[in-house]
Length: 633
Image 1 (spheres, rainbow, N blue to C red):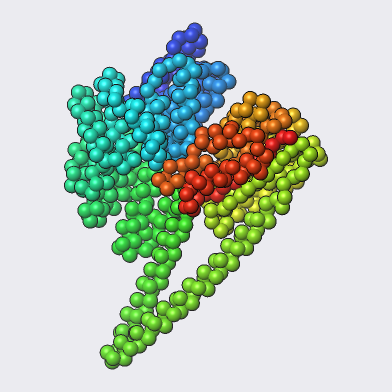
Image 2: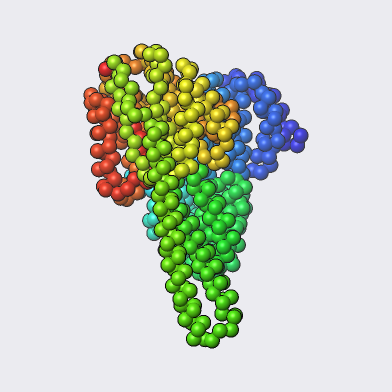
């Protein structure tokens, strides 16, 4: 074991007594200290072997931090282990630290802003419960809103934060300054002038720090802001000025971002070779650290460049990478755009083939007049053939999509169960010809009702296949606890192995006086309690079906009394965007349910859909909407 690993082991052994004597844990951790992070990583096997305790939770938290800048998947894994042990050992003071880091890992590295917002909100509540004043929760929530494109909410929090942000940076003396992050937030919501203003303040703060302790990120924000303003030379100046600091900081996500900025700037200056060079640097580094946004942006730019150069193999390679990643991130509103890009690429390949055939004909040596006439006739004939082929292909695809849609609809219940003490209603609206949402009901010998709501990744025939597998796996369901059913169904989906396809699913088992809920990566279930006229938002964390083999799922039980309502839904309604790109929002949904709790199940659906349609203002919703409402009479 390495020198630092041995030191850490001794510290851990001593901690068995020291930590248990109510000594405070130090949550400050210099993640830029490569020797310290390496020593912690080297002690992984030792930490894993420790019995569950507050000490082990603390060390898992440190281990997650050691992986934060190098492998976000490993960081999230160890943070969640720390969270699980902290919850079983009532280690309350560490939970906001863990949840804050989980929010940053999901938001910064995995580009999953919805989960980041959840953990940031949870962090704020936990600090408030511990009566600890912190600027971080509001600050991080603001950053998350900016990445979600919610300008209104971002500006509201910026108004609260910016008056004291410069003073906070100087007070903390921290390299990663608050004023620099405000600059980034303004840049993310496309207010480049404000981004430049605060980033320049961050550089002033930088001058007060030792040369080795200066932060390179504000240089990136300035470079990116000028890139957005199409002032490419200024962008490159800040890129080259800050590169040495960014490299010295060792934060590989920042390095990947600045590579991408340089690639886009060179692309704007038509320096194609340099653009390719920095795009590949960004792609390779982002792949190493599981930084999804870097992988996506670099592969998209490389596709565009190679496509312009007619390098078909290279362009198709990076198109496949970006398409696959978008599907993994559940960027469903981009699927049709990808299909169109693929179709256009196919047409360009065919046109290139026609041109090659035409060149071969010119070699034959016919007279110039005959060649011109024959070529004209050939081109006309090919165009007609291509048009007929296009129409045949379009007709074939439409026929297949209709068959897939018919199959999907056939898998949905023909009618909701008719149970004496329950009022049940359901609704589904697909965003494309074949959606990925699914709901179902199973009754078991009159003793329990199982209500299912799911959302497969993507759209089209592939998602329909996942729904079919799920339906088949649930067929003949036994009267088991909801989380046990999810465990068995996950193994079925994993054994079939549908590649990157996944299925998010929740199950509500309704009994005479209570219900049990288990979930695999679905949005929260809403429980309206008639006695208090309040709505509880129940969110159970977990991976989607088909992720890890032998995954186990948590469950929650609640009482279910007369007048109470259960609402299961996919994310299509709460994440529906309006004309400015702001999403409908989960809190808005919760308040609407709370104010309409006296309505029937169908009345509740009508109210929710009327509200979201008004929010959409006539535009197409990019995702499916599914609702299942069960009210106890």
